[in-house]
Length: 158
Length: 415
Figure 1: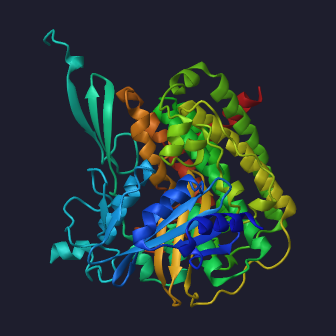
Figure 2: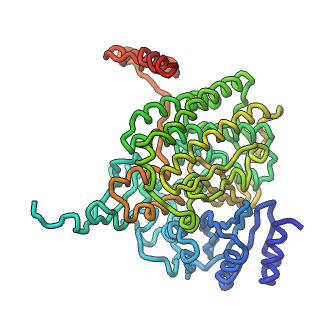
Figure 3: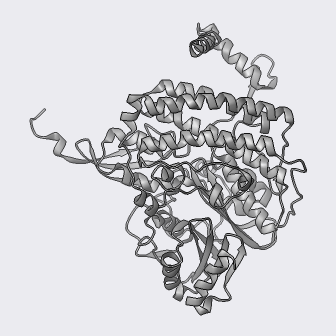
């Protein structure tokens, strides 16, 4: 049995409901979809027991009614897991993971600014990456957000 | 002046975004007590250009060129990380020869980047001779990149499914000759860095981050490896032709700026090794496979060991000609978070070198020069040789003959 299959068995052994969504895409690449309610429990297991102790980054996605969140986790040795979850746009709340990965702070701020997610437990701090005077209700990476036709320079001259 | 203890007052000073030390906009709010740093607050985002959003409005192929322009130094890192992800989604089998050429350009990029860093580090500690020497030597690899790809920066070598230019056996000889010169120079810099007292004293114990903190904060690349974190994507998650290359991952236990210097210098020696292996072992065959315009639905995560550390690209396709999502995590974003930690309780005067020691990404300029003659309005493009000749003549007219100075330098080096 492959190394990747071992990891899958171990995780599915603990969480039976993940047996359909935990996939081995190719050597060193795993993907797992988990419902939002179960996310924290599965995340903690993978980080602590599953030894996924490296966070590459967090990707936000716009999936229509939902916002998607992909936590790109890795282990020593190059095995990488895309752990996906989603929250409704009407209440796009996720929990911070800065307790486990302090370096995640900047990735979470990015999702707050660009997708309009709310991250519970994230400490106060400078926003990133948008400017301080950027409108609070505009989130550029949402699909319904379109850049204005004129460049900034033209708009200033108008 | 009153005789009060001025140095006991706590105060805050801003540094940046128009930065006195770095050619890149970042803002640091520094809380000071005397010369001692109590805490640092970092504000980033001044360079946010909306590239991820722009990628969604362009085709998969156009995005190769857009993403290559994220950075003028690690441009090949970004284009490689991106095309790898797209090729994985599309299920393309990239020819081996193309993978070897990507590896070659990737290592040449690391060499020019590390030489650039060494010069910047020298400059930040007031050792400008080191800047002059290393940037002169860096021209060797810049010329080589220009010869191989047509460009000094933003090489444009990658395309989805392979590379756009082949290398000839004659170019192979030029590459080996350049490596021989650069290796000699690097040995000299290793000697300077490990024997020159002023460098050792200025860099040791400065910008310290322990192994545990480097791991906890998610440091990557030479910043992490200089704190004993034995991680390198080229070995852990091999891409391009790295699985077939014999090289060592360099680590160091000094955990400070001195360690980061040693790591980068030793990494240069490993890069020369890899480049030589590429030239010796590059297989014959095509350099590209045909890629479809529409990329099948799916997603992929691509990890790449850029000169500054792990570069991460995530690409998602919904089956069309344009990506649904492109996400980039450049290494500096991971490393900048360690800077706060490195500066706490240190002196203000250490800030430039500590920040520079994570090697944050600088921009670089194009070497193509367009000339419009004032008398006849004729436009022409200057070749590299004519630009160099023009530059030498311009300096000579002002009384500086660089060719004479170069000859003298070579004579001195021979003795």
